[in-house]
Image (cartoon, rainbow, N blue to C red; front, top):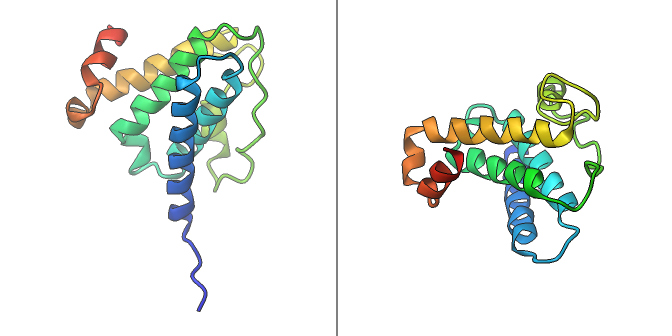
Length: 149
């Protein structure tokens, strides 16, 4: 017998890995965490696009994506957005929608710079988080609301 993990198992692993990476990066007092935060956000974006029925509407996903983007905006390590391996190739048919949410490196409707783009994404994710009724039961809801407003 050989048990083959389902795509959903892989997706759960990536979300878990991404949130762990984000948590580690945010706990580090040292510099050089921006690449880890960006990678975490990229994987969370990808997972959200793969499972648009659950993860894309999950309060935890919205909260974590917003948290990642907020820390991308606040980070002062670099004048350039870190290179994240192109994980969006072959993403189950959602390449265009996923890439729409990701920094292209050029002037876009999201803004002329990556900090502007990350600010827009932060506002979208936390704004959405605050409109989900079940978010009120998430740890940190009041803190997110306070920062957002």
